[in-house]
Length: 291
Image (cartoon, rainbow, N blue to C red; front, side):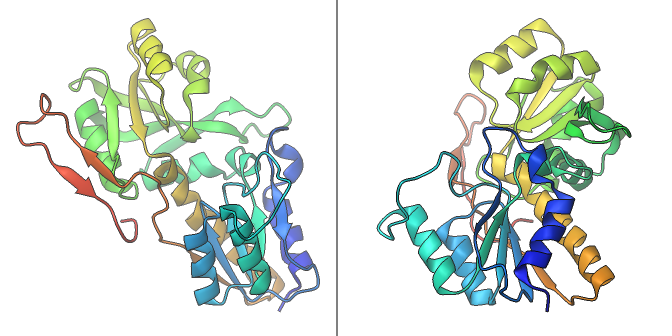
């Protein structure tokens, strides 16, 4: 089995830490460089449920998209949520590694996986990385549908093909408008509206859209919006990332066993439709694995 240091070198080659945003906190949180790694678990969030899953699985390394300590800390006391996570990891000899914004802009990156989950054809990055001579890296992706859909049908299609969450997918715009091209960005994407408008696409699918930016975007252009759960737009990356590490393992003859957590860690657990939008409001609860 490879040493943790060897696996981390491979992960840094896939998602170089120097390509992360300056405010980000990527890289290795805990783990002994000389420890052997045989089993790796990929997940979006480094929360206790995921760490407990790693313990049960017998994982030696947990790779998450979201950082554990984004803003730093002065304590890892087990009486705190994040401290308990660290204590559990160290007690069971499980390393934790984070690939966040450096995975967002990679080739392939988070938005490639999102586009893949929706079976979209990628034509290029939404915000190209100026340091990439090939023009493939960058934030978000510009895509084409296999065939045009109405906004209503595209919303239903996205909800059916992304992991199930209480939020589902909501849309802004004329439900009957035909959509042929769209931009996608995994995670929070309302800072990208200028780039989306410049791309001239029919729609933008992302997460965490706020009222004012969304309102301004729809008032200033015919752009349609699709807003999915943050976790659901990033979970497909876990499968993509695991496949990338599998390929590295095969090249080196490591024999790593990679796993993708199917635990839903989206924080929202219920949704009720407004009465004026449905004569029979329903409340939906989500548990278990993503579809």
